[in-house]
Image 1 (cartoon, rainbow, N blue to C red):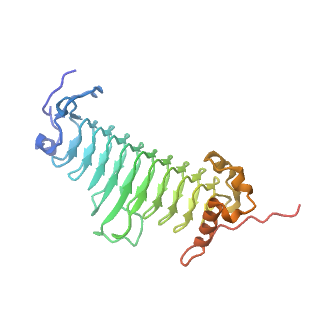
Image 2 (cartoon, rainbow, N blue to C red):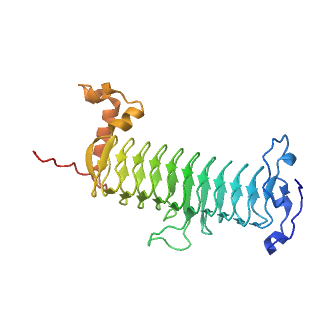
Image 3 (cartoon, rainbow, N blue to C red):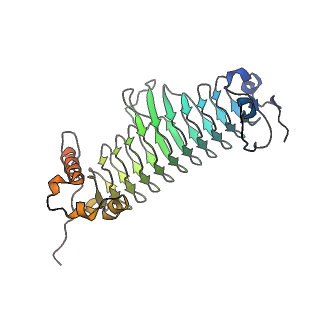
Amino acid sequence: MNLLFKIRNPTSSALRSLSLQRFSTPLIYDSNEPKAQAADSPAENPAFIHPSAIVHPNAMIGLGAYVGPFCTVGSSAKLGNGCQLYPSSHVFGNTELGERCVLMTGAVVGDDLPGCTVIGDNNVIGHHAVVGVKCQDMKYKPGDECFLDIGDNNEIREHTSIHRSSKPGDKTIIGDNNLIMGSCHIAHDCNIGNNNIFANSTLLAGHVIVEDYVHTAGAIVVHQFCHIGSFSFIGGGSVVSQDVPKYAMVAGERAELRGLNLEGLRRHGFTSTEDQDKELGKVPAVCSMVQSLRDSFAENRRGICKSRHWSGS
């Protein structure tokens, strides 16, 4: 493979003015993708930028990064070591990608707005996903700073949208190890914990809080300001307009409590002893659930999903 240390036929004025000294590593330009290889020094593991990509000279590109054909990297962007931008993916605005992040074809990360988008290590942004752009809140004032903070090891699948906060004092936050399937939406100022699974077309309105190990089925909608407790399950097609307590299972066109999420609890190591203990007040899981219920009735909270009324037949 021929490795050239200069740009061949640059396609824009930004590329013509490219200064290699702006980058954190030497750059390689070639018409083919580079083959992965071990490197003992930065010179042996340079970043690769396809000649058709548009990379601002002020962008920071880490060691071993790959920027594919027709990609765009803005002036304030920072790409960590080993990041991969597949063809026609774009990084705009004050955006920082941690190490080994992958942007699939058509993904857009960041926006030319005040504030920033910060994404941790080992995240995958799916095909045509849009992450870190302006919120859809009419209260947002142009010129205000807005923020998105995403942790590590998240898989964000195709056509998902995740928006920045609506006010300078807030953030949209996503933790670690979440699987966010295709066509999901996470609106402004949401706070998502760790190890959650959102099935396709899970839609979260603004200011929703999701704790840890929550599992949603497909095509669910969560009303703004709702809280979804840890280890809960939301059935497919549900509309959640009030809080979902910890460990609960809800379902229905207007989501109703259907009992405990027993299968989910079993999978996560909860024992039958905890379910059947006669002195439930001493069981930590029960204490946590009771506190979750109490919190849902605090001022400015939405209460909990109603229980289902069973007929006598």
